[in-house]
Amino acid sequence: MGSSSSISSAHLLRLYDRFESLDRDNRGCLSPDDFEALGGLAMNPIGGRIMEAFFSSGQDTVDFSSFVRILAHFRPTDRNRNKEGAQQELPSSRTRKLKFAFQLYDMDRDGKISREELLQVLRAMLGLQVTEEQLQSIAERAIQEADLDKDDAISFDEFKKSLEKTDIDTKMSVSFLK
Amino acid sequence: MELFFNPFDNLVCILLGISFTVWFTLLLVFIIVPAIFGVSFGIRRLYMKTLLKVFEWATLRIERGAKEKNHLLYKPYSNAIIAKEPTSLEEEIKEIRRSGSNKDLDSATEFELSDIFYFARRGVESIMDDEVTKRFTAEELESWNLLTRSNYNFHYISLRLTVLWGLGLLIRYGFLLPLRVTLAFTGVGLLVFLTSIVGLLPNGRMKNFLSEKVHLMCYRICVRALTAIITYHDSENKPKNGGICVANHTSPIDVIILASDGCYAMVGQIHGGLMGVIQRSMVKACPHIWFERSEVKDRHLVAKRLSDHVEDKSKLPILIFPEGTCINNTSVMMFKKGSFEIGATVYPVAIKYDPRFGDAFWNSSKFGMVNYLLRMMSSWAIVCSVWYLPPMSREEGEDAVQFANRVKAAIARQGGLVDLLWDGGLKRAKVKDTFKEEQQKLYSKMLVGTQEDRSRS
Image (cartoon, rainbow over all chains, first blue to last red; front, side, top):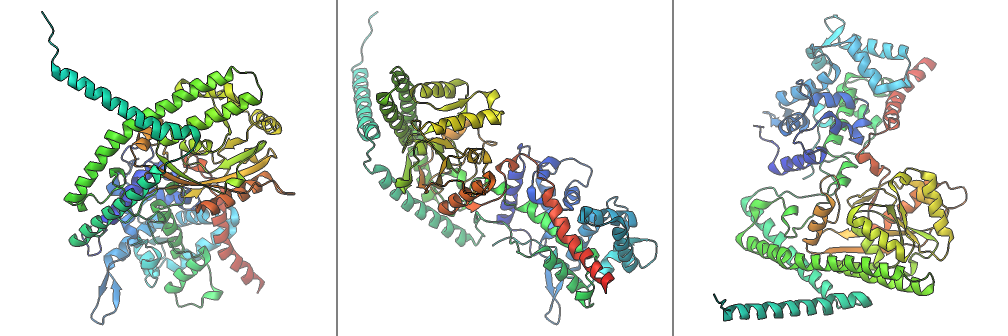
């Protein structure tokens, strides 16, 4: 992992235990079925998309190192102390998390969140609880706010810019119990 | 050619003969005879205390070893891997937005791109740790019980500890295992043989009396075959005829544990092989409820046979495990309502195993039955507590599901187990969509709810 707060061997062992317990047919790798069996993931409105993140490189199985690599996106970010003594996020870890979130929206991986893609995500998160018009208006507003170059899509830089003040670290991190 | 009998051979034969006799006498006196009469010498409890002291020492050594090397020990927690914050959907999404904008939040809770963070995080949390899956892996221990199967800190073991472990291995596999296997065969063999004999008698009080004695004796021998040290609490609440006994399920051993303290009518599917032989001979001595494979699917038939049985007050109480599957003894999962619909008095029983001596949980996807039994017989001991809870009946206006949940809560509370709403069958089946809908409803209330307010003003 190469950074000062890399995953300790104890935590890695825990993750390996977890990997093994998810791997129900003991093949040494996880398949979509293994993820679908997780209650918590199945009831998550974007559970399917999160699962996609693990299988993104076109393969239909996930081995342990890929498993850890994806989960590492959610490590609490490394922080540096700058000259004034205040803590700042390392830009690289922040960018990694943003990239992960961006890819949850950008299904076809073309580097832009189109209106269509935004509508799909919104539909997933809201289900049948809102009407088509409400969905359209929400998407419209979101694109208007973030789309700076007016190409009717949100690029990764625009995405980053609109979230530059958001505290990504605590909200997109999962920390191990000591 | 003459065969010379080496005087040595003679000596060896005599020694073998003597040790065999001694062995058998010890077995008989210390184990089988007490089993027949239901008394105990207290040897097993002494054994338990000694073992605990040894385990504590072993754990301290490991911790010391790890500290010397300044490493983080793999500390198992049976509760969670990750720190989960108990915030609700609304709170968290508002917090994310608050950090991202200077706007006055109360008037503008509309969709933000950052909302997805909440769902992404929750999703990843459930991949790393969830309530259901961890109930189906063995519970983890704080101290090491000298079994390699429960130790993850191998590289901190000193020489002394390794020697101790080796000694333990020798004792367990060389002495305890053969002893236990012998006892197991004796117990099962006697069960089949004696119940067949009792079955020849005409129905009546004598038969019931003998059948009771025979069952109890054989189960007690089996209990000793596993070196199970059981503490029964509140025996005044023991199930009576015409009732249904329900208990939480951790392994097939549960049956032996309960049946060695009282007589029950078992319920189950008829198997082939050895199991089937045992089942068929048991039913000769007293009425158990065995179903053919085809009958198991027919819920009405099952319910009818069960209710017929409870109505006959001369028949023994039925023993049922409503979870339907083995759970790892840290929680109680959803009870299937079938046994609660019949309308008989329910006698709940809580069984809690002490995991320090050997993990009794049967992970049926990992181990077959024989493998499991071998593991059980090569552990140190199986220590558990059984609580007989006061009988419960279905109340007015309560349906079967609510009644089942009430009983489940009582069992969970008594045994110190977590009471979960999840269905044990979830470990194999997929989750229903209703849970997802609830999440969607919560989120949409946040967004759309405020839009309605705006249109009003």
